[in-house]
Image (tube, rainbow, N blue to C red; front, side):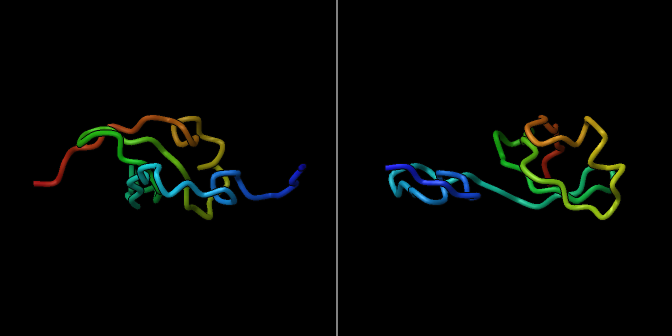
Length: 73
């Protein structure tokens, strides 16, 4: 069977036994983004939320880039 779709396979063929990612919305240097929490101080950028096209051209904000965060006290 061949299945063509614009959606990622993990959204089509959902595995309920796979642990869920911990996603959260944060701001880094004034740029709003959705990150996947890897540890208490490190996250990986999943998506950038901005109306400024220059933000998307900045390699520091590319999806997959690691972001170091200071934990909230």
